[in-house]
Length: 215
Image: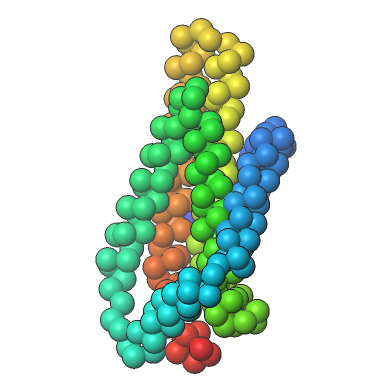
C-alpha cells in the first residue's frame, strides 16, 4: 500500500498528538533510559585491567573474524532478530498489562540503556573516540532509531494502562484499556519487524564494509 502525502501527514499528526498527550510519561521513560546508558558507560570506565582486556579481546576477535571472511547467514540473523523483538514485545506487553509490572518495565528500560551505554563505551575504549563511534553507527544505530522509540512507546502504553485502571476500575474500562494496549503493542511489533530487516540487511553490510576497510 502506497502512502500518499495526505496519509503521511495524518500519521505524522497522530504521532505528534500521541506524544503531546503523553509527554510526561515519555520524559520519565527517556530519563530512565538515559540513566541506564550512563550506568553502562560508568561501568566500562571503571572496569579493572583484566576485564578491559577481556572486552578488547572479544571485540578484536569479532572484527578479525569479519576481516577473515567469516560467512554471515542473513536468514539466520533475521530469524534471530525477529525472535528477539517478538519476545521483547510480548514481555513488555505482559508486564505493562499488570498493575505490578510497571517497575519491571522501568527495569527493562534501564537494562537496555545499560547495554547501549556499555557497547558504545567499550567500542570507544578499544578503538578510540572516532572509530568507536563509527563502529556503533554502522552496527547498531539504524535499527536503534526504530527500536528505542518503540521501546519507550511500549513503556508509555503500559503506564497509560496502569493510570487508567487506577482511575476507573470498572470491568468494562479494564477490558477496553487492555485491548487498546494490545493493539498498540501489535503496531509496535510491526515496526520492530522493520527494525529487524534493517539490522539484518543494512546494518550488517555496513558493519562488514566498515570493519574490513577501516579497523
